[in-house]
Amino acid sequence: MDPMFPGGQPQFIFVPPGSVPVPILNQVPVMMQPAPFPVFVQQPTQRPMLPPQGAIPQQQQQQQHMSSMQTDYMTDDRLQEKARRWQQLQTKRYADKRRFGFSDIQKEDMPAEHIRKIIRDHGDMTNRKFRHDKRVYLGSLKYMPHAIYKLLENMPMPWE
Image 1 (cartoon, rainbow, N blue to C red):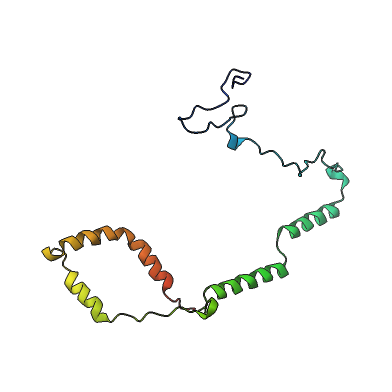
Image 2 (cartoon, helix red, strand yellow; image 1 turned 135 degrees about the vertical axis):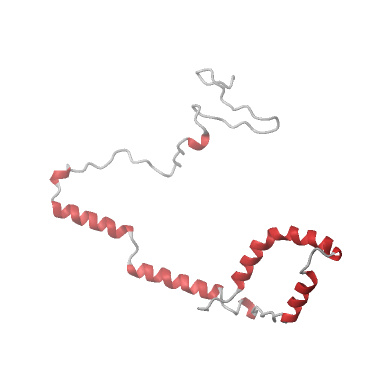
């Protein structure tokens, strides 16, 4: 059978060798076509008949509007429950003690002299001794934003 539509247009898009052609139905890309309903989902055959707007009293309309607004938002109890669960998860997530009794050990800070020595030795990168190091340092600059982010992430916040 010829892969053509009645209009004489090809059923498949031409693709490079070795790849699978993608069928296009009615010349609309597959992603833009409406998804077919699964068998177990039934589409409503008719919309329920509502009386005309003027037939419903004004008070009933307001009650319907208020009840629909209440169903859109969470109740206070549900909101409190979600807030409590979120707080509980965050407490567990950022707690010192982890599962199986393991807790993160704080690293001891390096002495200030250590950093001063590095700055003193490498401060002037024009020195011939550091010409290879300069290349490494310049290459590592692209990782600095991530490193700073990680440092900030691990710093204790004032409220913690």
